[in-house]
Length: 273
Length: 287
Image (cartoon, rainbow over all chains, first blue to last red; front, top):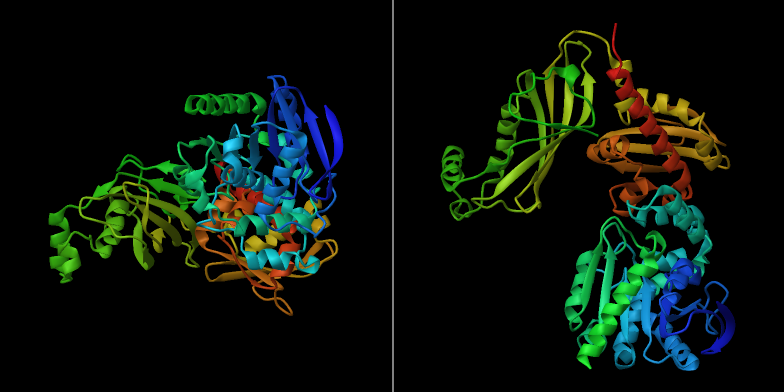
């Protein structure tokens, strides 16, 4: 495993890499950082991938973006494009969860012809049809005094969206680690979520896409994910029973599962070519 | 929550004592044929074209609930039905097959002690699982014996004065609740249907409970009887999930409500233990 601070799109950014082979870019969820992939990265690397795990601007060990917290998923996608080009990743896979999944879909629209495929988890490409989040509430929560017991709510809110199949000790660990967020950054990410809509671009996506959603994910309506899957040519759709909003943190041996999905995407890419 | 899979008339007809908050009854499905719908329209005089056009009269689906209740043998000791509050949420069509699911949400013995009021919440689903109707109805049920068993029922007499007093005792022993409220001065209100109860809290202790407290509650957390029953008798403390799904409404100072997130989860946790205690007391052999 190697770690670098790279200047990506004018932001000093923390990038972890592990393994050699087909590049895979792994994108974390709102307010979190690359630590969410700590188990997956080694498992994937062992299968012959070059796993690239960035902390998005403002997250983890990366500096904030020059113009303040990012509120636009497309902005993150541009940052990822720069990173891909800077590292010289050729036809990488992109795997993301929650806002990371949305960034993956955004990249599929922008440059699907230069991606091996995208696995988008807990994400879809339109506005939520039954929104639990509202822009007005998120804007209000950006004012610290209007966000009481934020850390408790992140902790309990995370526990509420981890799947029923996940052992209590593991759910507890996930929820505790999620408390490390910077609320200003998390809220800005979520503003990005509620305002992001790339449905018009989905029919022209030029790489294979696999959409994955947990059956216990309260944040994402599987119907929305299916709707996105229908818009993207030949997209795969998987519902994970008993899993919630964070499959890579919830599932033991997730790297193996992901390897299977990536192999399938790669095979389809070759067949199509 | 206890599931009582009802098969018609295979269980002895329940008296008041046999009903417990949290019991859930399901039973045989019911299909409404064109003939039955026409007959009901004829009897009631509601021959609106909608009903001759394939939509089942809402009142027929409601009336058939009482038939289902009787069929399950649950009506034998019912002395009276008090009220019905009912919603038609989606149309039922001729030929649809509906199922009834009834949850007991309240059991209160009357002051005369020879009978008691039982609150029921009913959900009606069609063959696709869509909720087509839902509502509540309370009934007066004869007691097997005239006795004062209120103490035995306190743990599931949700949002009543006796329940609040018992819960306050538990909360004052609970380190999680005490820590979470250790910097707080205010009153928490809980509401279930029309009932409201207050917990006066000062720096980690509940000092008073009751339907009214000086200065009133800072906020009131409100839900229907079914939500409280499911939350407090269900398999896990899923308060956060239910709050995220908007099953609760908050009146008053919403920021103070958010601030007490951890305290409210602890309160629900203790209320669940209290509800479980009632169950174990009732199941203990009596001498």
